[in-house]
Image (cartoon, rainbow, N blue to C red; front, side, top):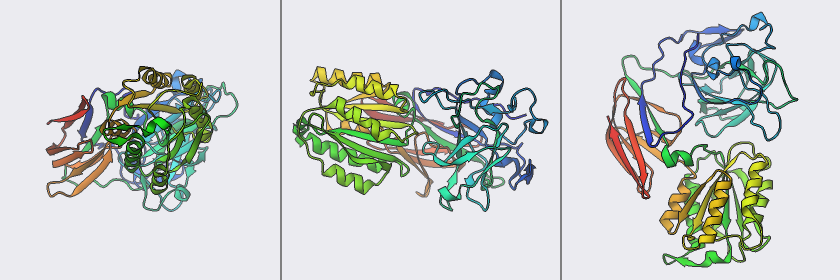
Length: 478
């Protein structure tokens, strides 16, 4: 019987750093063989935690428990699973997608006691109880995923070597259905019983107590980071009004500096594009949506010039082509200092992007529009129409703060000798640490430094960070 667990579908009202003891004494570490595949690390080779599960269409209640995909295989596969079309009550079905605007079923699992790495031969084994193929992606951070193929079988084998570097390690696997013809069987989509990795199991030093450190964005920050994207499209207003001066500086110059800083803070795995607009029916993709190349993007941003009216609707309409081939979650970051002045309907243009089934969210930043009620209201409507977030920014620091929410804050953990023992971002996988005292620096603006943060055996240390009136405050509860 696989261990039961509870995983949350909501966020909290505060940023939380949790220190947890990771202990699973029931796992077998000696080699174990399941359906012809021998795992050198035994049961610790299999996925330990459900991170996310989105069920698609037509999955029956008997087959919708994602925890059934944890641990080693335990289905009745050899018995043929009579009467349920290849499904098994000890597996979870992902369902199938009825149309291009329907959800694609997916399951995200985490390896806690093991990591996935490139080894000789196949590296990853998916125990799928039916003949419906599963799309397979892997991730080191739980946010940016790499496609490594499709698989069928019990198990189906995946070799990650063509897609990764030899020293890379991965903690997450995302499985999703491969849309096909409409399927009304008892077991639509792939039916996942277990996921095992040949990679290196974690070594635990006997007699040394460990905990885990995890930063979770919550409250307003959690809403901003609710679905951390892997793809970013920055849409920048370059109309003539961006030549106006605030705080002694030209607005477009402020925007350039802040966006360049944002690019420095995005993950190395990010995919980024930049579109500008200024002048009716004038909008240009100055950098296509590609894996981030910071120097190239920064050069393009520095070369931007202003002029013309504000074709908000036209710019949004052009983004359709920018994102056509992107399937991962996308964040459109729209920065404008005015309203539509070319006769279009930007609110409707934004709605149409959503109605077309794009997997995206919006951050809309109104730059210096607090006194322009009509412009502000329109930008707020664009955000609301897409289920996104609107921010006011009337200064360099406010613009910096608003754009920083496009990328989770980073943090660094130091030991008592000042050595860096871990660096991560809000919402990334927890890090295991020996018990002891640590200093944590959270990269807010200004940074927050927490000293003497204790990691204690079999206890939870919690750090809450609140955003209030534009400032960040942290409190440690040992």
